[in-house]
Length: 172
Image (cartoon, rainbow, N blue to C red):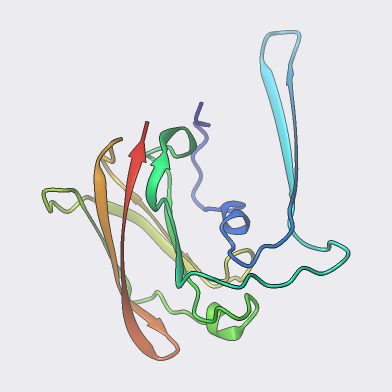
């Protein structure tokens, strides 16, 4: 069941989608209280592990969420979508990754007929935790089993303006 708590930032998703993440620990507890209500808590550890892990041998040029066929149980169609550029695949901490400029970026999401979907709540940052840069937005009217084409244009990476295209579909 999808958690109906919708937020205005992608928070911990940034850590989970970080292609440089090599070690992780996750813990969760759940309890039904005497009044029948349910309480849950979770924790995520992503740094300060002892013993190093090598950086991955291949890192994608970008990380988009959702991308490709994505299970409906893990994505609420009212939630934020996100995108990160991996400008330097050699190191997450590299300044090239943190200095990606989304200030002139445009986002276009189209359905199979080519109709533009409503994009809103656009924001971006370069605060560097988890994925080093982040562009996030909402799309009105997303539906399951429909392929959407996303174009993100006007992204400045190391002084060059770039565009990115990908697709996603929320599958039951």
